[in-house]
Amino acid sequence: MNDSIAYPHLTKSYKGAYPFKLATTSFIYPGDYISNVKMLGHYVDEIELLLFESIDIDTLFSDAVIDELERLATELKLDYDVHLPMDISISDQDTQNQRHALKTLNQIIERVSPLAPSTHCLHIPYNEADFESHSIKKWRTRVRTNLEKLLDPGVDASRISIENLDYPIDLIADIVLELNLSICLDAGHLIHHGYDVADAFDRYFSKISVMHLHGVENNQDHVSLDRLSEERFQPIMKMLKCFAGVASLEVFSFDNLNTSLQYLERCWKNFNSTES
Image (tube, helix red, strand yellow):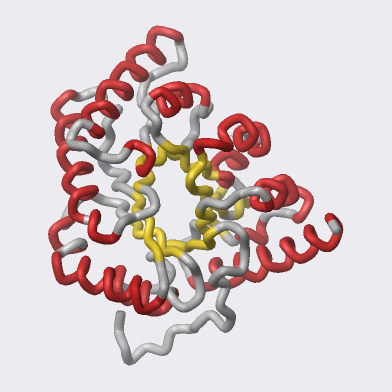
């Protein structure tokens, strides 16, 4: 981040403001993890360290970066979670790509371990040509086998949270439960793809360690939360009322974060005033 450029600051801290831990992403400001943590760490409970790509892991999470992130966590009373890369997949149809994904994921999990992330969020794309039963079975076999391999080095299964994407969460939920993994419930993805958010929350509540919150508008997600009407946001407010995990505002700009924070605060006050 260029220190000569004056970036806007949030004006209010939301640390400890809710019964859940409030988080946002490390891509709010131009710059690296450290500069974003310095700008955001006074205002939220947790930072979601985003890894969109699996390249340059040694640079992104060098010993110096890890040491500084540790120091900042102590100084700012801050926690982290890690969003694992999206350019590699354990469900890839190519076995060599699967092996590369597993090796890379385990390297990342080991490298960030000093930060004690609350969770490591993992995307598992559905990459079959159709949803016929034989296609689903092949995909599920790959997923289960490779998740077991991912856990083999002694990885804490409960610290791996599988995020719902564009396919029904039921396709993978039983594997998550059997392996004692966690769920990252992305409410924005559920809304975007036409699934019932409240139903998914109710059925898998005990396994949800983190929720991703963002707006959806004009077939685009990861926009400001205020793009959801209060009526549409009401079921999510009911979930948050009884949720003690991490709720991450998964947006990628200051404006979207600032308006999301204000909208969440307003809806929270309105919801609690009508409940009392």
